[in-house]
Image (cartoon, rainbow, N blue to C red; front, side, top):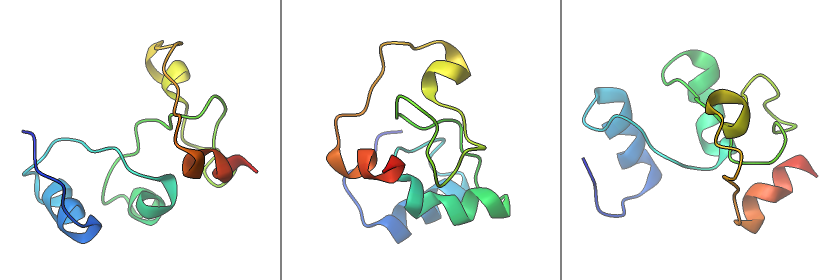
Length: 80
C-alpha cells in the first residue's frame, strides 16, 4: 500500500501495526526499533554495512541487488 508523505511517528505506527508492510528510512530512525525486535531491518542501502549497525546487511548482501545504491548524502554520513 502506498501512503502519502507522513511524519516518522505516523509511518512507524503504520509499520508496527501492519498497515504497511515495509518502509525506507534512515538507519538512525529505525535502529532502536529494529534492535528491540519491534520491526525487522532487512538491509541498508549503503555500499558497505553501516558503522552504527554492522549486524544489518547491505541490499547487495541480502538479495543480490548489486547495482542498488543510496545517493542521499545523509545516509552516507553514517559510515563516516
